[in-house]
Image 1 (tube, rainbow, N blue to C red):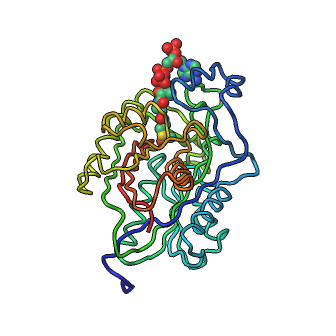
Image 2 (image 1 turned 180 degrees about the horizontal axis):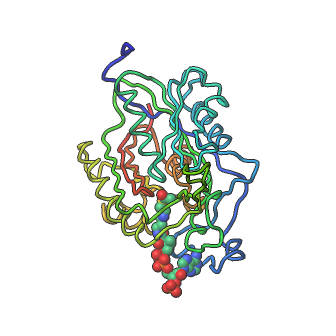
Image 3 (image 1 turned 90 degrees about the vertical axis):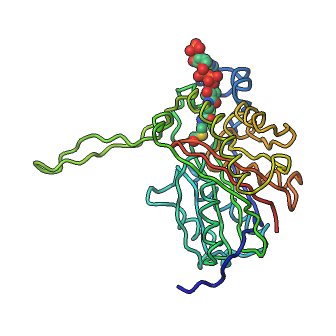
Length: 334
Ligand code: ACO
């Protein structure tokens, strides 16, 4: 294939989000498990979460978030060359991105899923950007979407209080100037057992001497304290690395946009980086941890509220299962 362009930069030109209608507050959770609004707010900052009912698919949420992002970018679905869906909870294990492509009518695009848990959006941003940088594609739709409520153990008070459902999307476009200033993505499997949504196989003998493992995925298990320690240590490091690559200082960051896992993690990371609280984007009180969707939902709200303005520099960082973590420094807008 001939390269159409070379050396193109990236512009982040549209955002959109979509969360389910159903809201569960902390008092509702305290009817299900031994917890309280006070405990959850003090330990996490979360007050509400949106939950997808049995008629709401991941593709529906993702497609709606995408339509809003595409509209803001002032392009049409047929302009899109590539769709990357960051998710750990696809409607179909074979992948859901091409179903979203169909729902959008993005007939020219190629679409695929990418899985990196709560780091999925940042990993997706870096992945999608490579196709623009090499000049292969000009218009990319990047979606972060998850319905973790399908996989939460609703009788485990250590995890069920944390998660919510939703989708966010951004449009990335080829541009003369490059708004992706620097990034760093990392993974480390040695702590994989700290956070899992794992398949557990049972032996099944097909015929004499031929046995396979057939089972099911089991609900999320998490060592909360390990994940907390990991996040507070590794996230500042990876943001500093991305800032070094971008050749900018912390004072030049307008917004710190972290994966919305826990307010205490957001506060601790901001403190380590010496980013003042008013520069930290936080909406987790309303949505909880929406996994790969949390960064693009928070970005979209901040853009539509007029907080994030064209040319603002954003330090985004995701972290989660894998373990995976990563940061990207980018400017908002054309
Ligand atoms: N309500 C009341 N009490 C509770 C609850 C609850 N919902 N959950 C735990 N407790 C109790 C524990 O049983 C424990 O009691 P004990 O001392 O009698 O044993 C006590 O509270 C303290 O428990 P800890 O687990 O030490 O509480 P901690 O302060 O660590 O907070 C939390 C737990 C909120 C889960 C925290 O560890 C955290 O947020 N970790 C990070 C998790 C995270 O962000 N995960 C997602 C990563 S993203 C991804 O990829 C999906």
